[in-house]
Length: 208
Image (cartoon, rainbow, N blue to C red; front, side, top):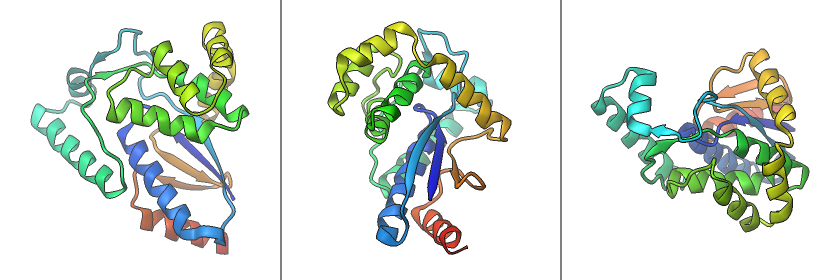
């Protein structure tokens, strides 16, 4: 079974969805053999390098009041705790294109899943900047990737075309929101669903 997890680094519901999916996969155990691939999606593709204040940006983007944002934040923290993830305070929203390029490269190096988790923790728990080359290089080394190779990928702009092509491909397939979990190229599960929902869906797909 191939699972394509379409997501962005700065998306909190993508964290919840991934944690839930992985719990479901643990419950399935050897019943299903899974290849998990992370696919790029940018929530804020036009975000400038300096980023933006998270509260101000989200209020403008969604037309939400401070109380609505706070309520959403509380819900995210609670849902994260239910699946074993600790959300910290995220003060800014950043461009994630370089993080997506590094993830693409990490997939070729067999370390994509590890880097994805490291990026999510760095941003959502530790409030680090996922567009900062120093942060990206540190995380690459942390998960066992070659730091010199990672530095060359970032400095050269390598895999820019490939990432843009993948982003367009998933958009052309109708993906407009993340997380989107695509199973075997034809079954779609959207949103930060609970582990039980992923488990039931995957069992049904495997049996079908």
